[in-house]
Length: 213
Image 1 (tube, rainbow, N blue to C red):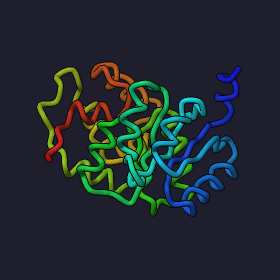
Image 2 (spheres, rainbow, N blue to C red):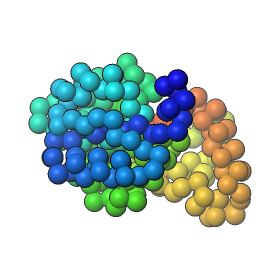
Image 3 (cartoon, one colour):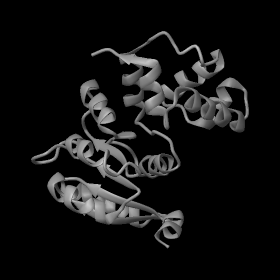
């Protein structure tokens, strides 16, 4: 029964220590059709206790929390609750913070300067299996990675598509750039994930590209 409900409404929890930001996110989520904020917390300690019972689809997670960081919180929750998705929402954009967050289990990374429309579209993209990021973050990741010897299992076209994914392009934008249909893009991405034995864009990028620290 819960599963049916979940199909209709994307359940969101928020972990953010600044009350005005937390309240603003809660209002945005609750006034958007198809979304519901089921809980919000001002620190990682409360979130660690209650999020498993809240059963959100996505957790919007700040990094700079008062005691334990958001990254530490994700690192503790993700292995135990693999279906719970985490969207970093922060002012931090240095490479180490980005890489640490993704390594901990975050699947999306937005800066707090993101517009309300960008926040909602990113939450929807994450729910549908994407790995949304602010454009500046995507560019930073690309500039911080250098290609390893790409797995021989990937075709030239698949590597090209993966590079565009790494730069933050949406599926429809990739289709337009490569003059192929959206369905073809989805098919290529499905094959990439199968060949690399990964589940999302972040895992695929980490497998094909190597971070420079």
